[in-house]
Amino acid sequence: MVARLTGPYGATTVRPGLALSAEPSPDRSVWILTLRRDVRFQDGTPFNATAVLANSRRWTTLPKGRALLPGLFAVDAPRPDQVRFLLDGPDPDLPSRLASPRLGIVSPAGLEPQGGANSRLRTTEESGTGPFELGAVSDTRIELSRSASWWGSPVGLGPALDGAAFLAEPDEDRRLALLDGGAIEVADPLGPAGLATVAEDPLLSAIGGPTLGIGLEDSVRGIDSARAVPLLSRVWLTDIGA
Image 1 (spheres, rainbow, N blue to C red):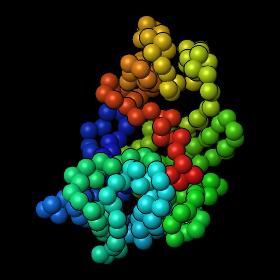
Image 2 (image 1 turned 30 degrees about the vertical axis):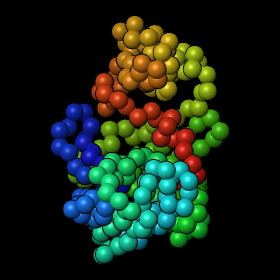
Image 3 (image 1 turned 60 degrees about the horizontal axis):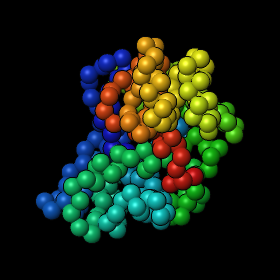
Image 4 (image 1 turned 90 degrees about the vertical axis):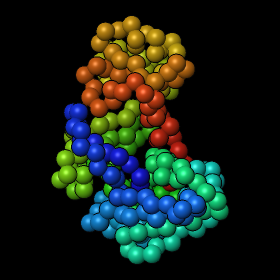
């Protein structure tokens, strides 16, 4: 919900995500988030305070959600485009916590039960607000296609790709071989040996490390920072909404 987004190909304009601002109380124990208006989930449900409340109930009634948001005891909605997070003590890092991809916002219509408490995500539903829609899914492959209704496209946020496919390959050596052979463009995660091999190849780049990181073709754009990069595997392998 909390994000700072830039457009593709080196665009410098920075725009907020679903939360336009996050304002704390003087003691940082209450945070008020003002939400982006006129956003809809891919199933047509409006994104608003009601949707955030349902998601907050999902987070706080699941163990991993509570671990990501320690101290959160209540969330309410002063108005349709605002939500208030109430904590049992000061937390200057709440916006950073809400930026975790494991706390993704999904449509209440995609939850069972829809109220959010102890809910699970219906995997067949198109429930997000992001730039890609879920396509074919199998045990070894997930396909995504560009969402024509994404709110970010009119404000210059792309996306740069029309689609992407995620392949499941549990063996690191095989992932590295697929990357080296050009069958895939990103191999994640790779351990020290794989990262060292990638670093020696002039056509490949290594990001992260030294113990775990990402290997990618130099033609890939948008993942070009040497700073710490969240592993894609840690984004996808979560049961917060599963």
